[in-house]
Image (cartoon, rainbow, N blue to C red; front, side, top):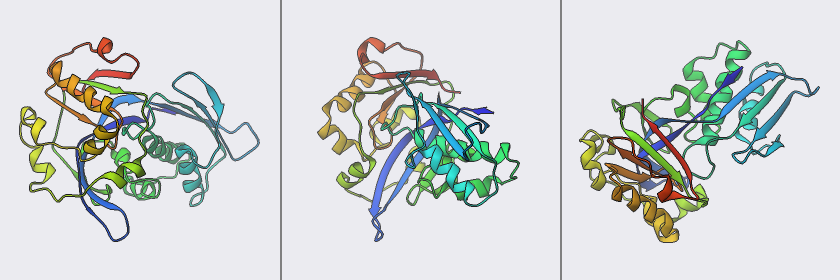
Length: 275
């Protein structure tokens, strides 16, 4: 059985306060996009309970059963709670890592959904969301996989009536990896005057000055190339542009298709008309 874990972008990301437990409260909207990995499961043939083969973006094949892989973490989590058959997984990575696109979290969430279906566990959406919270803050989003207003540490969800259907998305990622933990250590929490949810209800033409990603300030200071990429998006007619998550990817929303490949040579490049 095969499934296609998709990426997400963040529409705004406000870090509102640091909690006593060391985590940060935030406001953001997770929005699913069409960039996808491919994840396949087959009956186990290696005389073990589990194996994982990963094909990277550059086409390199490797066997990766390490505990750090999110597919592995998801398999081991659900295996510790439910009787499941031995399984082999094959993962083709198309979503770049260290990009703020949730690729690893999506792989984990889709692994849970795939195991649930192939093993006839009958777990509900709520039960899958509860399981996924043990794997990462944004993993639960990929269970329902629809626009979501997130608060708390990114695990308190509220449906949001927001659609970018028809807008043209260009997503780029330079050869820069930003550690999420390091990004949080450099951000300065500020409680916003207005809820991000209310700001996003305004026309997209107003978002440039109101829909803010708090990770940009420190990222732009350390990596001027990322700041330049966002500026280039606006120079070429983007209605709204932003870094996604803690970076390093940057996206632009356009009213119509435009080809900017020549402007971002050497970067990962993805484009689509949002559905």
